[in-house]
Length: 157
Image 1 (cartoon, rainbow, N blue to C red):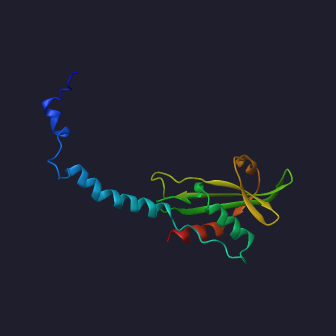
Image 2: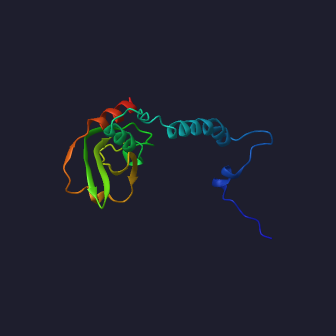
């Protein structure tokens, strides 16, 4: 059986401290891991926008559902703000009533803002997100959507 030879200048990495002692690297880990874990858990449990009240208008419910999406910064650690939000709809597409929500979101990237977009389907008063159908929104008239900015910017302050 051959023994592994460690070069002299790297030997310090592999030495163990005398029994009963904790190495400096282990001390650092023991001290900083709980702090890092605590920050991670608190960041992932973001407050987010409050749920809409039962008497909320349809536009407020659409805004609240859009803000719960990850594209709109729902689980973002960094606070975001919304500008120039737009809503198109309601419009019919294949027998479905759809709304398209888009906005300019700033805060997660330093150089320029993101442009999140979501398609929401209204099924008899129940709102659901339609995945992978963003192209449905093309060509429909949009109008300003201040409810999204109000709810989104208030949740981050």
